[in-house]
Image (cartoon, rainbow, N blue to C red; front, side):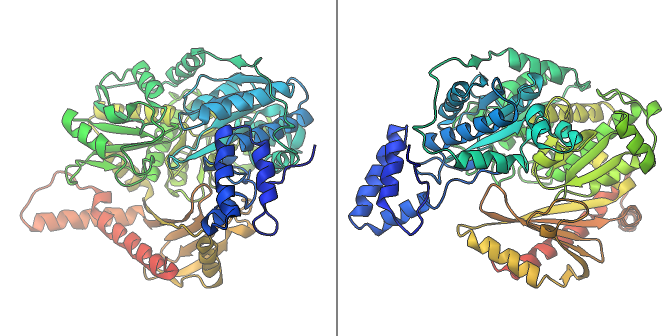
Length: 628
């Protein structure tokens, strides 16, 4: 069969479009292309430009799998593109595992998600594999859990997570057998089993996708694949129930799934662990691919939690939990009378610090579900750690992405544990040997890597709720716990700065400008180190990013987003414990001089305005520098 071209080579080419239309299995997308092609042949410049974009090349398959707008053409998400991807993945698995390979397939509630999942099952089955399809509209963590629980060879999750409504995506995970076939280091195969793909797997799968001649050449079964029932959800909930995290005091919680697929499972997980006073946001509880009440279905975006705040004020909530649409992320908000909304959304770094401290504390006390008690833990030398690794009893390790705060590492060290940085994304974090907790500032947390080797916004939310209730029982609070940790380790204050750009070429231009002539100061402090992460840094693989470090220990990392048209900047300023104590003492003296009395002084609250001012100054400087 003649290969169907998937991009123009010398501008608009009607023959390539017509061949793609003839090969398209979806009548709707085929008719869309026919209509645009007719206009283009008639000389419509807009139609020609549209086709040139749709045929600019095949939608790139990489470590994030596929993600893009649902529309016709090879540079979009559609059935033709998904069938090719499924065929390439199946051929990769045949080459590495052989016939009888198993693939678990899940999907969210976005447009075309169920169709893409079914097409994948049909291709896998026809290729000689065993396709195991989850019930529709389940969270991404369920797919990651099922992959490990069933010891499958691969997993496919059809989701675009928190992208805009027009998008969909295709995330690929691998089990141990295919990794053993392509990794030279057996420990790398073991560490990566159940995680999202990284190099070289992404390139090997992409190579097989490129070799697919046409959709018509890909066999698809009409039936024969397995359909799991809701038992898999019950098994997942039972695992959460075994994590030794439960309600200690009655806690009023508001939960939103932001029109995604997390509501049923998250609410069941909370109920199972003793949280009965949970109030779902009614307008956002049911899955809705249009995400009608939010501009972007992402808890990080401004306004995303407005309806949660309204309900929280009504019921007097002590904690707000927000999942993103596929529930692999979660955000938390707590009461704050100083704000008009009445609640303050915690940053991803604050939640990561709190969860890390909680897990380190429970490990030391012997109450963590991994049962690694303090009696068997001590700070080890490098040689002892190597010996422990070889004996299969590696010490617990905490990890976060390089763009996340350095606060987790400080907290881990305070408990005598090892901490490490990884590249951005859970495909890297979840691969850390000995991992007990990992997080990234973009609201992703892994509290049970043995069962879910990915970020999991449900088990993490339950763990956080348990912490909040335990603090309440002890007469403390989330804010007080943050202050305690910071008084011990220092205050690592962070802030994001993003530039959303329609013209993605501006992103590459901004990175070049930064490499060629980086800023000399950050908030008045001399920049002493500039690291080009594309050359690799501190043992990490190369990635497109720049790290700036100042004399005052302020840090900025700039990188293009891997999933959105954004240039992202990660800002961090630091105050050491001595500085915190001095600020709190000065604050207390000022209050006393005014004739007032205070019973306690919060060290972090006293220094917070100064740290915020430094973050604002750096943000302003970067905006001026980039001119975007």
